[in-house]
Length: 272
Ligand SMILES: C[S@@+](CC[C@H](N)C(=O)[O-])C[C@H]1O[C@@H](n2cnc3c(N)ncnc32)[C@H](O)[C@@H]1O
Image (tube, rainbow, N blue to C red; front, top):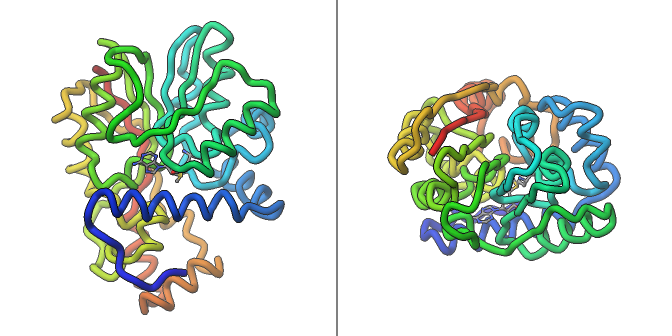
């Protein structure tokens, strides 16, 4: 657990996020795989999807996007923003089939290495992982049918640039189907300043209205929330990491429940 306050400058925030997620992928053990599987089931992934993803691809760090993946069509070109170890990218690759293509974009070398290793071990050929920031996508204009993303855009200090880039790379009629964290009311400064809360996909989350407005401002239409779940429902106050964070931020159980009630996982759809 880190005690310092998080940086504010966008490049420093990205560096902090990248270091944090490199640690996540490097520290994975067998126990984490089981926890990630249980979390995946809770988020709505089917047994079939959990079985289909190559071993080590599901890090249990998403907030759930299986219904979006189910709507992808054979032959489509799909981009996964912040693809991590490749969990959703591999499921999307299965959905778009051999005539389709999936590009996972991530800025963290350790994640890219793990995702590429997973693809190679599983012999999945219609997926590639490119290094890049989601604020400056390594993709051509109007080259993509659908963008998916699972619990990543909240980590960006420049969400307007992310949605601007999504608009640029999508073909007209293309869609974004992302799962992300938003807030229904502001969280206290101690949480917003915390590196752990930021890496835990909470500290960088926007207010719901602002988030949806950012998407509309980038030019998208049909902006809608397809599903949502309150973080409070999933909050496990017995989880030692949550207890440690609460202790350090001097937050009581009641306060933790109150703040958790403001944190929402959304499935957002929008069309170019
Ligand atoms: C919470 S994890 C989610 C990984 C994956 N989507 C999943 O569900 O397993 C966040 C991932 O996004 C990547 N990421 C965060 N901010 C990013 C940015 N600005 N540009 C590119 N990748 C980013 C991190 O490196 C990490 O792999």
